Length: 130
Image 1 (cartoon, helix red, strand yellow):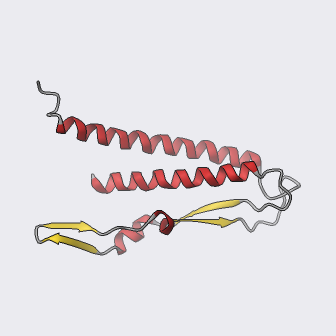
Image 2 (cartoon, rainbow, N blue to C red):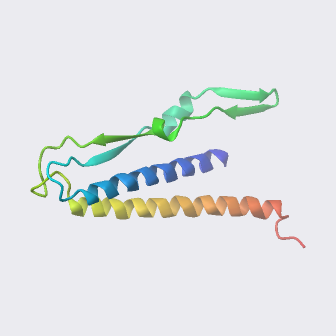
C-alpha cells in the first residue's frame, strides 16, 4: 500500500508540473516565436527498481528515496517548427485538451490519496467502534 501511495504522490507532483507548463503555453499562445514546452516523465518504475535498499534496523527494510521532483520531470522545449497558430507552435485546442486530461488525472490521484488517508485515520480511531 505504501508503494501505491508513493505512486499517487508522484502522479500528483507530475500533474502540478504539467498544469504549470500547460498554463504557460496557453498564456503565450499569442507571443511571437514562443516555443511551447512539454513535460517529460522519467519512468518512476525504473528508478524504483534501481533504487538501493536502506536499512535503519536489522528488522526494518525500506526503499531509499527514489528521487526528487526535479529528477523525475523535465520541462523541454517542443522543437516542432510548424507554427500551428500562425504565430508560434502552440495549438490552443491541444493545450485545452491536455489541460482537461491533466485535471482528470489530478482529481483521480487526489481522491485516491484522500481515501487512503481517511482509511488510515479510521484505523487509528478504532474503526468506528464506540
